Length: 48
Image 1 (spheres, rainbow, N blue to C red):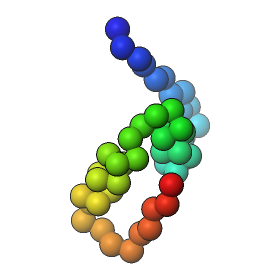
Image 2: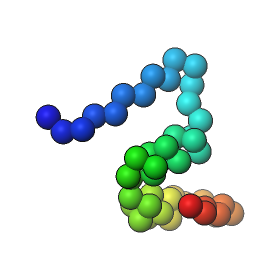
Image 3: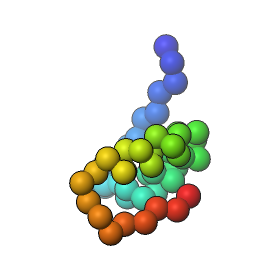
Image 4: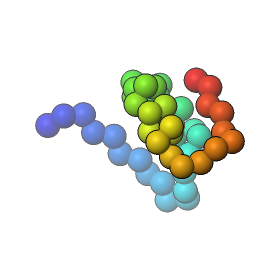
């Protein structure tokens, strides 16, 4: 079995803090940026 991450979100979860934690664990910044650029929205800026 590979690695597994379990999130206990009984009271909710903050998106920006979740993304920061996932990046800290080794998630790909390149993949994140590609996913965000695929969204049909304007007017946001991301810095890592």
